[in-house]
Image (cartoon, rainbow, N blue to C red):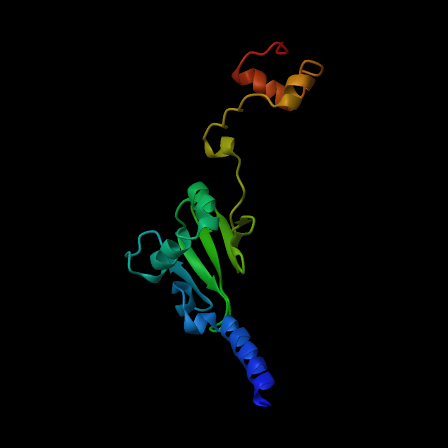
Length: 167
């Protein structure tokens, strides 16, 4: 009878320990490559570590928008020790960006893109691609542009379409 309180405590400790050991008990593809990189993705065979890890990340619902917006990375880096939770850095050499996705208890979260060392941030005009056309005016622009049509956002709207406030 005296073992019952101890047994419950030991069970709780065991379960808490198992949660920390998930890389050991249920390894994900990135758990096999601690603190490694760069692992090639573009141009690598489909069964290589880089493409395998990217496919697993693409299955994460919280990262769908990230991959739709940025596409497939050129290479990845796995950040984290052997028995620790891992983060993954997606490296886009073509655009000079690096995006770290962090593993959290609620899923994956992407940090803001970082500029790669040695790369300058360029504007769309410097790269030769046209700037995107502005969408329809917001409610605030509809109210404020007739009052001050020289504002930068009002002028850009007038460049793409004619509104009553356009000169």
